[in-house]
Length: 168
Image (cartoon, rainbow, N blue to C red; front, top):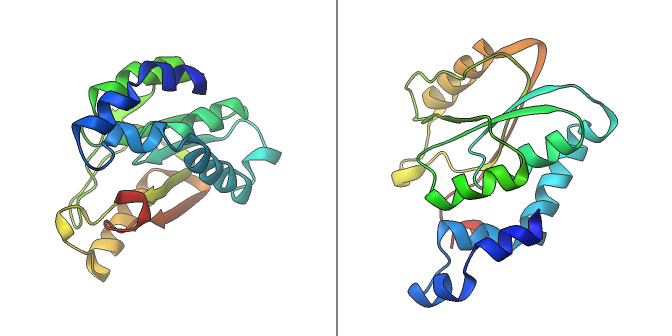
């Protein structure tokens, strides 16, 4: 399926239309980089040694992590804010389709559609609009996540500050 992603995406058209990668281009042009990060995350969470976990990935982007989780025998739903149209073309190719629109804004309630064994937010940007979260926003985020974790559930968060190498 990953080769097919590159076939769907017109790299030259995207690159020529702007000086930096678009949301589409950054994920497809650097498949190896993004996929390796998601593999490392799955290994760190022990997903390679278990099966049947119910997972929700917040800020899933193109969907590499949900695809990998499903490939490893888990069920992974995913959320993001208004995704580019290209994503909806790619998700069926990856065999993932449990997308839920969800905006996680500092200090505001958010609802996920179910209860999960693991909630991840791997390389997720939480400081959109250059507003950096403070303790109060992070506490609220944790409370909202806790509502959706099964007993003994796990939360894995690795933030991605805007302006770092993955968002240039």
